[in-house]
Length: 297
Image (cartoon, rainbow, N blue to C red):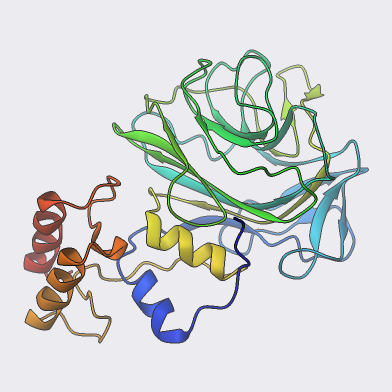
């Protein structure tokens, strides 16, 4: 059942965001009202809006970018995350009910899927399943992480794609928990630019164009975990900010009270006790937390 996002109380926000080391390296809010530039509020990746893509009202948080059956947003030759690099993408997406085309939401891949990564809706070229979203960074059909939530129903959906180096790829839809995991392999370079709303070939053609709306696209320089994904889902437009993972109770001090708070959460199976972000709560999380605590942060 799809949940409705809502603003999380301040205490919960502090708790949810307390263990994050990930930082936003790009954040396109798509709140512009006109023009051909989508500004990056977190970094330096201002993007070119190619018509008929346009800013429109009715986003999940303010305005959004609409793709009415053509157009795209080109960031350029950036955000390649080569080799064994962890990173995450977070985006809100809306399509018309029954949308059936194979549409790329965001990513960078060549026409032959050589190098790079992508989030897409529906299935094509052996990737994904109808009516759902998937994330691939393997360039091999079957290696992708495919969601289970129906996303082509005319409603806004929050999609988070995670590449955890030497571990797995993951896809979340409308908050935690994870819906599927895929294969994590070193990412090799692609000569394609990062594009929102399609896939641009080295020859300049744009294929697999997405029809619908995209809002609040964020990219992080590390793997997001369940509490962080849930925070982004419940707080559209907000960012995960890096904080001290050892300050588990978020009181501004690292002391034994944090150990007690963590152990209480760990014993109860609280998702926030999943300290090493491997999707399993076990003794490895205790070791990961204590290492951070001994280091002072």
